[in-house]
Image (cartoon, rainbow, N blue to C red):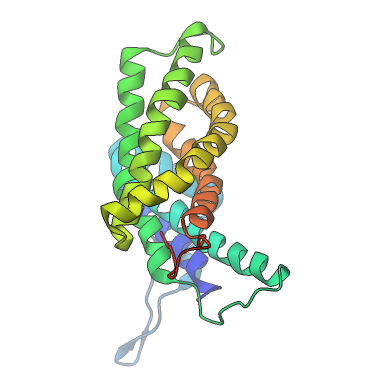
Length: 245
């Protein structure tokens, strides 16, 4: 499972991008007697240039779906990486590490979060933000600075609370459990958020073309999701059961 999940995710994204852009993945079958042989897997692979072309085509034809699929793949991969890091850190600290495989359910919860909340939220949020404050020819303008302030000191605190509730309720903590987690971890999480996302948002709003902003955000969110994955699943001293996303 450890070796196959990233490959599956990459293949799935490539196939989805090709499909959304109207360019179906090339499948070939060869008859052998009365049976069809296995597909020619070499024809399934897309080069980076082809994948990028397919992605941009999909952005034109189905922007929300494309961003959502991308976010699901990236955030699922982030949790997968986070679980590997958790085990590695535990081993270095001499702690007992379970021999169980990667928690696929936890990976899928993060992927589902990217698919149905993270990407749609940011898709519509950036449309509204650019509609209220259109991009300026000069990227380093007062408008850009104002959009960064709105993003990080109004939008981000609200969205962080939604992340806690979405992942917590999906895992089954209940409202009381999520409230306790917010009380314990929200302050540190939002401070860590600003350390990463204030500079990242400056780059995103100032220099990234609007159609690619969610993709850029998803790439940065890969690293942020690793932090969230480890933070939200770190067992507190007084907890008797695992806290997982």
